[in-house]
Image (cartoon, rainbow, N blue to C red; front, side, top):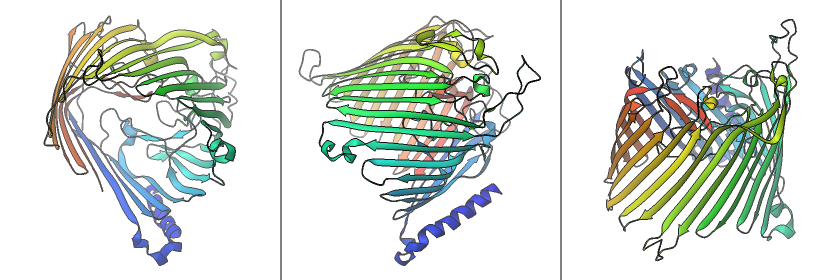
Length: 557
């Protein structure tokens, strides 16, 4: 019934929006879209831990269609999870219209009705977004308005309910945000070398109360706040080769299952500074987060119904062993620092040689908070005391050095060395810290204009050992090899294998074949997938072990 109402809403609203321009012809608009179909067949493998799947063929599919006519837009998305692929929440099972909206995008005014995505600043108080690979979609169903009365001023206001699989949250999210670009707003600053933008926003969640009691006082019901607000201020500044972005957010009392129903206020601070010049750049980031889990419903766990988003400041590695222990942002509390340096060695120098050389160093460290009084952290507690600049247990640390150099006009070699420390507590487990050393060699050979051959070799040495009681299949020492061949600018084939040769378990091979023609891409793969976390930007989901066939088809029009 809800999907039918959504379809009627789209048709009727589209008619209302385009009716004023019918004299120009409604058929004068433009239709674009894309389709994606992913499938999986998996069977039992007792060694890697994959289990039998009742429905052998699992499939996720979606089709997005966008109609544009001048300043007017209308869009729909059809999704199908029959049944959801491994690692995706079973509550996605089903099919229907998941996204539908109509919008007017003018120079001074923009209005969207239906489902929409939005972000205030870096997202620390509001980020409605979608990531299909993580299975996250917290679109808001409601209305979003942006007003630009003069150059340099943008005001946003919105209200809606968050998507919750095939339904929407019981709470109402409302927000307003303003941004001032001083260089556009103040004429004397128009040509200034100093570029300055100021912004701020406020978000409020309204959710009806529930009957929740404390184990310490079973006869007393918690007095839950019906309205929970969060505000943030931010600044973006650039002067010459230097830039600085900073944002501070604060959240009111928000007892929920994620923080143990405590009444401690939340806050977060992020600082990002960069200095860059030709051939050299350095970036430093700092973050402190305390009790900033902000959900549309207080009793929901997992990655759904987050109103806000706390960006990660750890490097998002692409190589398999460097990304074996991805870090998930701890919204309950963490402190972190990251440093990133890139340097391009000039050509025709002693170190750079004929083609020059690229150096990239990155390091980060994340710790817990220094909590000096934990009595208030119990259910119904009024809060706890922290040392604002103090640090707690080490959660994660890493350092990597990447060296990329062309050996000839046809060959490029990239060598990476890394070391990282990981605390299992961030994944809800106990145990000692894992210390890992990683080495990667990546060689690309352009055989000719249409053929490219790539070799990759990786090694990981760890002080961890596989324990069946813990069942962490990342433990131990590993080696990996990969060969990938791209030919005729359309086909590619790759063969890889990851093998735990000491104190570990598992041999994970994979063969993939892909074909690309115009805007259509088809990929087939067969092999084994290790159980673990898949993380993008500090947001993670658990991927179970699998053994079998995967395929993916994408196209756009």
